[in-house]
Each structure stands twice: as structure tokens, then as C-alpha cells.
Picture 1 (spheres, rainbow, N blue to C red):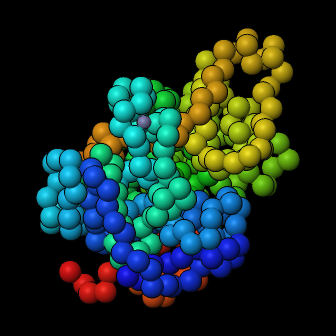
Picture 2: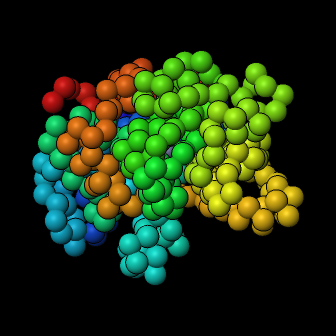
Length: 341
Ligand SMILES: [Zn+2]
Ligand SMILES: [Zn+2]
């Protein structure tokens, strides 16, 4: 079958590889669409040490072809989205409904073969049925670009109606975070991004105000002035300076939720200030099948507008170059199947 295969730093090519063989409890999916995430760009650049021969792609939407062994609940022909990682289903966090914290996760496209291929084998426990009316492209990105900020704002950040929310980084995650914050009842939403196009998109998504953090010598002070008392800040960038910017913008009692992944080590404010203001710093990772189901239902019922979420759809034969192209506003989605359904 055709697949995009990572061959080493800077090299990904369209190859002809063996068909996946599902294990007991797994299904074979025909991949209908797979989203290109920032993580995939890091994989292809060689930043993440993924072995050569890996097929990336962890934002997957597909149609069930075969069900193997104990994979109850799914039938050939079902349209599904997938979690971004295969979870064990038996460790304490998995049993507790917190599968995003599974102790032995296998991230798709890194620890096992991912979705930039015509077919992929996935554990049945990773799948979420697609409601009618959800396109393949939106089904593909729901698990990551939409459910990740939902988990961060609702489950981790416990956003309450009436709060002022700041979203730092208005890319794929951040633009959905702006909409979700609105849906969850934020009274005021401020988006921060150095890109003018991203700031315009944030306003279109429902932000009240935006800030270009590069125009001011003291962006934290500018952000405090614009936000007028942020009680919840969502950091979607994954850098020390943006985490510190978020901390500096918090009102007393506020909390910062970090979704951006990276290797930086941000600093806390001086302890007297940090403790006196009772600030909270929280990490947030991924989402669960229940949360993905929730955002899919929000989209299907018209509560979330995803009309600008997809930048473009690229046939797999032309997709090897998308990993080095500039990120558009919205996700690029790869279409592996040969024929239109
Ligand atoms: Zn991702
Ligand atoms: Zn587990």
C-alpha cells in the first residue's frame, strides 16, 4: 500500500510498504484523512528521534475494514476518528477514564505506524464513531486540534462562566481554544500571536482583543492592560518566554494551563508574588475518547464552527512537501485513498 515513510532527518517519501496486520482487539482502517500537526513537522525534521521506516500521522479519520478478535462494538463500514495514541486500557489511569495519561502509550506515527497511509491497524479502544455530517477532514483533526484545547480548558482549567481567558498562540489549537472558551462561557477572550493573519483569525473565531507580543518591550504589561484581569491563561506554544508571559498576565487566583510541548524550563515569578497571588500552573496533555466524542457532538450540533479549521486537503501522492511548507491558518489534511468515496 502507499504510505509516506520517514527515512531520516529532512526526508519523507511516498513508498510502497507492507499491509498492516491487526492484532487481536484491533481493527484495520481505510484512512480517509489524516491531519498534519506541528509534531509531524518535528518528526520529519528529525527532532524527535523517530526511527527510519516510521509512517507518521496521529490525527486519523477512517472507515473500518476488518475487526480482529475481541474488538466489540465496531463493524466494517463504520466511520471513526481515533485517539492520537494507542492506550493499554488496563493501567489505573486508563481504568479511571484518564487514558490520556496511560502509563504505556504508543503514540501513533512515532511508537507505532501512523495514518499517512492507505490503511492502518488501531486498537478498537482508541476509536470514536463519527456523527453524521462530520467531514473526513474535520473528523481527522477533532482528536488533536479541537479536543486537546477542550481538555485543557474544561477538564484541566475548569473554566467557569464569566472568566477572562487569554490564549497564547493562535494556531490550530489556539483558534479552537478561542471558540471553545466562548462556548464554555468566558466573558472575555484575548488572543496573543505575532502573526497578523493568526490575530485576524482569532478575532473571526470570537476573540475580543488580540496582542502582538513583539511590538512592546514589556509584553506582559501590555497583556495585563488589554486583558484587564485574566483568570485563566492557555499557553499553546511550548516555550519558556510564552509560559512566563502567561504567568505575568494572571490576576490573583488565576491559573495557567500549558498545552504547548517543548524542552524549555520556564521560571516562576518571585515566590512572594507567586504565593501571595495564589497562582496555579497546570500541564495538560491530549484528550480522552469521551472528550473527542463531546467536541464531535458540538460540531455536529453547530455549536462549534469548523468552516475555517481546514487549510487544504492534499492527495498523498503530492504530500511529501507539506512538512516544510509554511503553516496555513488551519490544518493541512492528507487524503490517502485513491478514489473519492
Ligand atoms: Zn498533534
Ligand atoms: Zn493505560
